[in-house]
Amino acid sequence: MQRIWISEITGKVGQEVALCGWVNGRRDMGKLVFIDLRDRSGIVQVVFPSGNQELAKVAGDLRPEFVVSVRGKVNARPPKQVNPNLPTGTVEVEALEAVILNQAKTPPFEIDKDTAGVSEETRLAYRYLDLRSERMRKNLELRHRMIKFFRDWLSERGFLEIETPMLTKGTPEGAREFIVPSRLHPGKFYVLPQSPQQFKQLLMVAGVERYFQIARALRDEDQRGDRQPEHTQLDMEMSFVDQNDVLELVEEMMMAMVKAVAPEKKINAIPFPRIPYDQAMKKYKSDKPDLRRNPGDPDELAFAWIVDFPMFEKGDDGKINAMHHPFTSVHEEDLLDSDPLRVHAKQYDLVLNGYELASGSIRIHRRDLQNKVFKVLGLSDEEIERRFGHMLRAFEYGAPPHGGIAPGIDRLAMLLAGEPNIREVIAFPKTGDARDLLMGAPSEVSASQLREVHIQIIKDKKGNPSTCLPDRQARLRAGKRGN
Ligand code: ASP
Image 1 (cartoon, protein in one colour):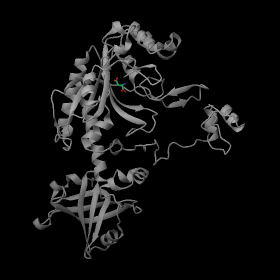
Image 2 (cartoon, rainbow, N blue to C red):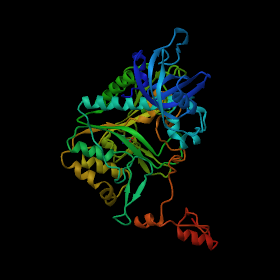
Image 3 (tube, rainbow, N blue to C red):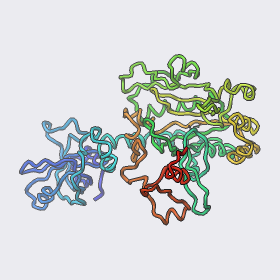
Image 4 (cartoon, helix red, strand yellow):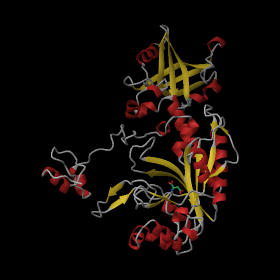
């Protein structure tokens, strides 16, 4: 007999069905044992009558989280026993046959209740149990529906989903990068992408015209707020567009997505307000203002665009940095040489309820302009060639005007789910200090693995991995002060 989802059961009164799932709860009433059987789609009450010895044995053995298959008859519950709190509360299943497929130890926390109050260390170490809880399952489903919506919506508009490499070369997005040693090329390293920025631009040079990817962005950042070393972006790029085209398309997509995925939410201003950066800083002292009228309303969504960012900013070290990234095009090209800090970028951010949801820009597609921006950033000709020669060369072969954006999937899912942090909408997140408590990463690797990739770990006197270089160690040991 083919197994059905529990959510399908209410339409099957009088029929025999096969169900599979986990024991969510068990109530022994002496003559009858009631099991709340849970699968991914929901929960249903299964009654084990005492008359049948075999069934009574199974019912007696069942404990929370045991895995069972049940064949049974769907009965309508008498009106008094209808449970209005359960979507399947109008019916129950009378067990005819039951098999224990696997046993389970007592879980370290209760799965039939919201796990929000359980210590996060425990939840993350036993994430496969945490994800069985209703809220976490709903969050995974919401995230899935959101991503599917974007995929379908963009595909219908001629966007191609294209994967770009994970083992690549650095791309400046303002964060530290994860590096991967090469075994085949001693002393050389791959860099994990902070974003597919350069590849998506090269896809525009390749004539793809409309690209998207559900892309993982990897950033080796210090512990800072609600950050993850890997996060997911809806990475997009388009050719022959100006800023207004990108803003309008993304706005239409976001409105349609909210309507399809979270129809209970209300967007408080359409079209989304467009606020120049200077004005936002003056009025709200922030480039991600929270424009909700009633921040207490969990269903209010206040989107806004922040536009006209400065192209450059001066770092604490006095160096000029790109505010977004150096591939961003500019408004006042003529000021690049004389007064770069007055130049505005064709950059736009989408903010939602005080969070930066997306960043994007119209890109540079001319070699001379790109070169000039690199120069403003203080790069030498040699460095420009070494790091970005491939981009400059690509621009010489008919690069179309293009631009794009990358909305953060985790943040969007968090805001739609009404969760306080992005870990609640990521299946296997890391802790605030970048540890994976379930798998136990990061971890040591064997001496032979290290040898293969030509890496040697410097140890201090006690044999622990050292954080300083050997010559400094030697000087410290000799009682001299190191720098
Ligand atoms: N690559 C940028 C980022 O990751 C987004 C973009 O400019 O499209 O923030």
